[in-house]
Amino acid sequence: MSQTENKISPVVQDMAKKIKANLEFDAKSGVCTEKTESFEACLPEDLSIDTVRRVVDHNANFVAAGALAFGELAVAAMSKNKSLTEASAELKMVSRDSVSFVMEREHTYQNRLGSGDSVTKHGVITSNYHVKGGKNSGQLKAVRSHMNEIAAKALK
Image (cartoon, rainbow, N blue to C red; front, side, top):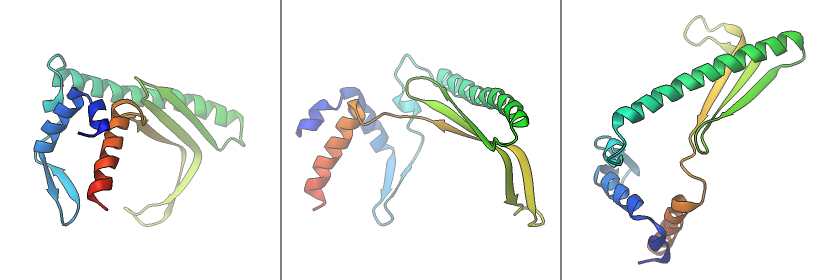
């Protein structure tokens, strides 16, 4: 057993076994696919899938509400400051997760679904929901180190 394997928690190891049993790996293409969804099977007993779904729904509403609040402030600022071409915001969520928004005063694109003519829109908001599964520390760092060790031996 490598040194890094000792650092990988039993919880992560047990979840990995469940996930691995549910994966099919095509060695020719290098693509790995789930036979069925693994997420629910890895939930702890005290966390129901219904609760997770409620949290996901809440997050979607939070992102939409954040876009609305930011958008209204950005439009008001851009209407007063004609040289302001872009505005941005980032809202913290739980742990290291966040949502960011950018509003462009004006965005021109080609209408590929219609006539192909250029279309110009004002107040175009782009949002990005950042889910940080982990920084390179803790369990993720232990897993990465472990994979580096075994790959260095197996892939040379």
